[in-house]
Length: 267
Image 1 (tube, rainbow, N blue to C red):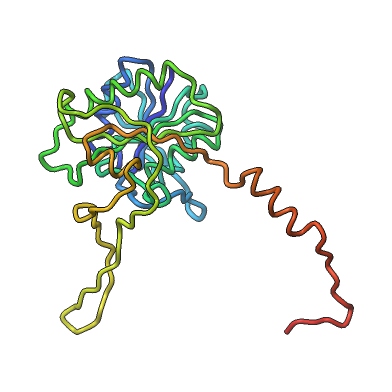
Image 2: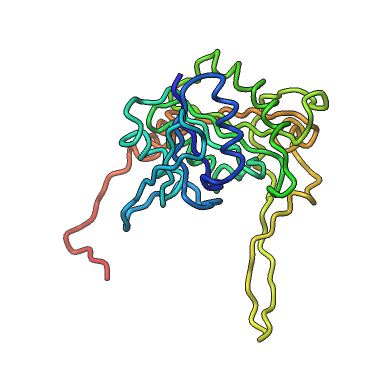
């Protein structure tokens, strides 16, 4: 198999190196990552400046890798369309520092890379770790857990247009509760603005992560199961419109006729 690896923590992040080490057991690897951290940048792409892809040799002679001065979505698009000569069989984004749960999928660059791959009709997986800082983080435990998750995902065919969100607890394999396939818990508001005064009395607002203070979750959702020590697996579909909603909206407009008169003007 041919894997395209990317992330939003930047090409020098230890999580991407750990991901490469796991995937080397399964096939050939190409790495295309941002040249610096691009967290919480969502699905943005670069329009008004040129992209540069710089060859790097961080992962050994057998792994072709590029650092790109763009977003995670840029990296996937550029990797598939230009840098990797053959279409990859799978795109994997991660291993991200910090979990991606619930509403995070709308903000996360890690998730956006997987979503971009699904738009290109390539199966994709986003992998995140329940650990909020790189310092003192060992990737030996996550690598062992990820190996257990990757095997069934590779053995079975991820449907076209679907990408998979995987969150790993920071636990030894024997302490992990297991693997749960779960829905997103969209009821949780993890990030909230807090006001801070500068020395001149001006108030500024910063987003604060309240994940450590959250106590209420949907029992069968991703927040609750990750907190209980499970690896969480959530399949997601990238389609913006759904047929059932299209049919419903069609009924709203089926008998509606445009009836502007020639004299009707708007200032």
